[in-house]
Length: 165
Image (cartoon, rainbow, N blue to C red; front, side, top):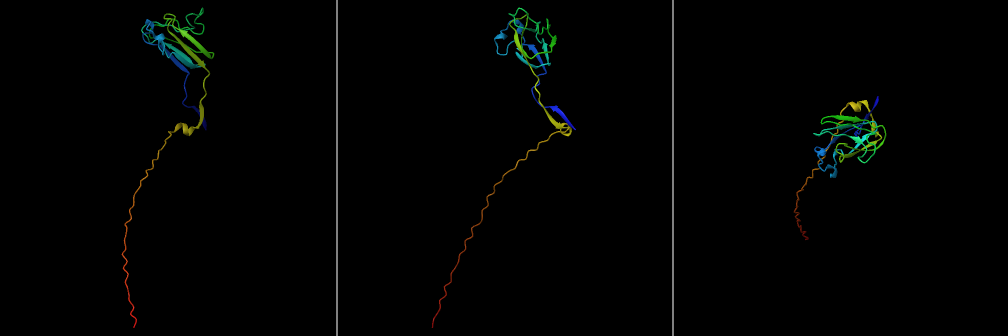
């Protein structure tokens, strides 16, 4: 039996956006690289869920558009969220969605909605249900120096004289 299971890949099916603490008090967060929302640029898959969570101590809104637009909140509008409240939005089209806080208009962010990435690979049921164990084998090289004894042989020659008579 073969089953298909997702491997590790970026999961953009849900993203939570929160205001940076103190951002509602004109703290200059708009001048910082990270902006006034965390994350300042959020990425979510088409059909995923964007959760707007007010973790700050003052009320905020999360409204699509930019402060200079004539019409705002056409894609989403959380309404006023008291501290601890949240709202959700499920994007239905791919694209870039600017948003801001209508109460604190310097607080602006961007949501990127993308097609869901496919990242699956086939595995047998046995592989899926068992733990994969990898064994590392370390071979140690041992060098031995071998000294052979030097044997000196003394050869004695004997001189034999022949006596000729």
